[in-house]
Length: 532
Image 1 (tube, rainbow, N blue to C red):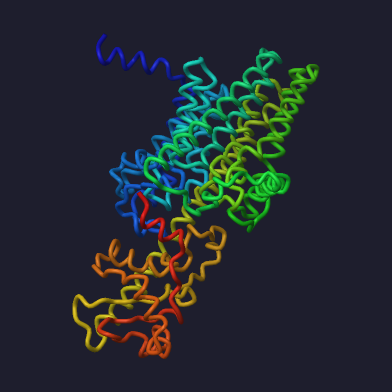
Image 2: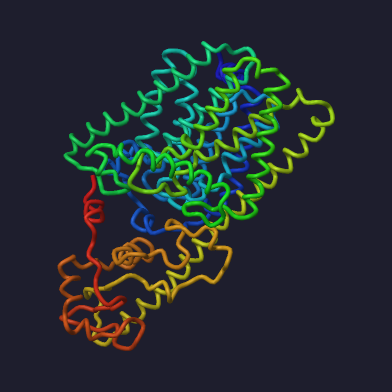
């Protein structure tokens, strides 16, 4: 068989629905995030990772190093963007197949929403891991797609699930939420039986548990072989001391409250909801609820009691599934970066619309398409705007930081007695009250990964920035030196930068006083610098 013939044979296995979702995700995703792919926008974490091998076993991400090798461990936005959108498009194609979409139009909308969901904007601010994280999203979707199939597929799905979690644990929620939607879809299928649906649910539950167990076993092996301990990041180190089961009721309540706030509470922590999004989400609630009830009534599914009960049960579990990171990491709150699985709520609405299309009475059927199109357009408009608001705010903070540090360097080099190669001790972080944005819309995306003022929140970040971004070879003094300088009477008598006397030479080195005292590095920072 020729190469062309093999290619045509392969394409025949890809349905028009899958192609529609793939192409829509690719085009929408690339255009939505084009700003991030054509600019290099650092946040505080990215300052030290222009080139980084991503050895993050100490954070539980034992597969991140291997996933990041696709872009040669280097922040290259154009390459990373291309790989990321490719993985997201593949995930979209598998998702519409999993949820049995019959409409190309709805499949295209689903692909567009998956590629433009604002949590991806936060992901692309961590450009150094973006392609690896998008690969993890694809692996999470692939794991459910495989687990739904044959016994061999189930085993491969377990492996894919472990690899997704080994890249970033938060994407376990993607597999969980999709599994819930798959079972929900089955309960609304007239051809499905109770025993078949129960078997599918148990199959997916055991797959999820097996994947998590495999992830943890491999993690323990990596930690033992490398002689490492988990970092105190997001409470990872406390995982070894056991799960806080006594806090389970409050954790469950917080998980549901956070999920509701994400969609319906403007200004909520770790979210980006605005009044506009609240209106869009209320419309989604009404539209999805109407279509679900229409399916139950028009197809007379309510006659079999297990179907409405099963559907309601899956819907009640969905907030827990999409925000499962709160349960997985009970010692901290999930950030927007960890909430990509929340896109499953919009996928559920699209799934309900697709199932109701064609079974409604003619007047309602005529209203459904334009109503759904208007809702989808409003949602995508919000997604596109929010992502680019993230990028614009972060880029402006970078420019403000660059201006500030450049002026600071000018003061250092013009200091009386300065000679090239002298040690420079910059004590303190950049004061954000001197670098601030007055753009009111930026408040919507205010989050630690979206710097509104400076990309240098800590003392150590200044040296990362000088060396990796401004190409100024200025070595960071030791911790002992910084503490000694901070405690000296001469330093304490100095005024704060930019006042006269805030840059001076003490004991043969240039000292810059940004804060009254030096903040020692935390155990986490020290462990991170020595990671392997």
